Length: 223
Image (cartoon, rainbow, N blue to C red; front, top):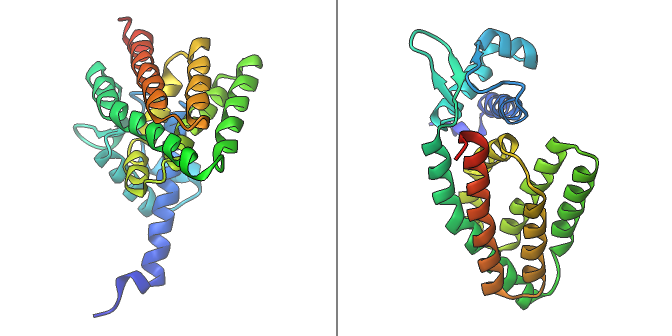
């Protein structure tokens, strides 16, 4: 039997589907595709300059991931975040984020400051974006900060698990407001990670995630 993984045609199709998926995801996250918007396969393919086959596969994948939903008769639409969706996301993200900070601090304590520069750079980008009132850039910087904490944890299973949540988190961060005190909380997390203090890093992250949950629910649902 032929090795499917070695089939260049199959690999190329998978690559196109992955590109289409990421392009649609970016449009959902930056709200070019608003919540509730109907997506027509042909129109999306034309916009992306692709054939309909990889776009169809991408849309199916995003339905399976819960970011799109099937319409009763045909097509798909961007799924609206309900309160339960946000609560479920935070229930999963909270323990993972806390453990990521704990492990990142342990990594710093054991191996030195390697990897801290990217965390500090994300903090600087967030401050710069906030000063310029560039909300989308600030959200991107905050998201990058959390992703780099996970990377610094040194746990590949945690990294892979968080990758499954990353787009949902990016979408949520883009929808809620971003109060100034949350930037200060990131700076506090950074200080504890940089100091190699696992439990202080974990505690500050727990406070941040729970505060983030409250902000998200208030921003999106008024309570």
